[in-house]
Length: 100
Image 1 (tube, helix red, strand yellow):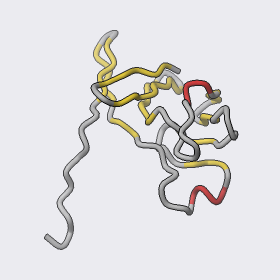
Image 2: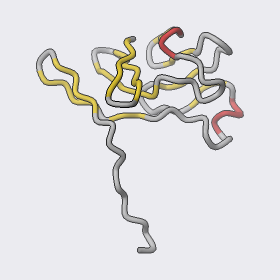
Image 3: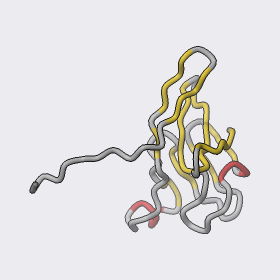
Image 4: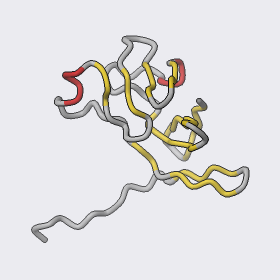
């Protein structure tokens, strides 16, 4: 894992089976640096409280209540690899609301 600064954001890059994923670098539980945690397959464990997240989706894996309480999902960033370069977009997509 590697945390990198992109503009005003810190993003964590994780390699899962040869595929690079980019997620928010801070644990949504207590704000600790996820780069200090451990990655086993697709599960990233926060070193401070052992919360686990799926780096592919940003979803909380443990504790179970984090999956149903809003706000405990990691931000996931689009990634594209071109040769030795890893390109990460920090732009938020602009989705049209269904009622507009």
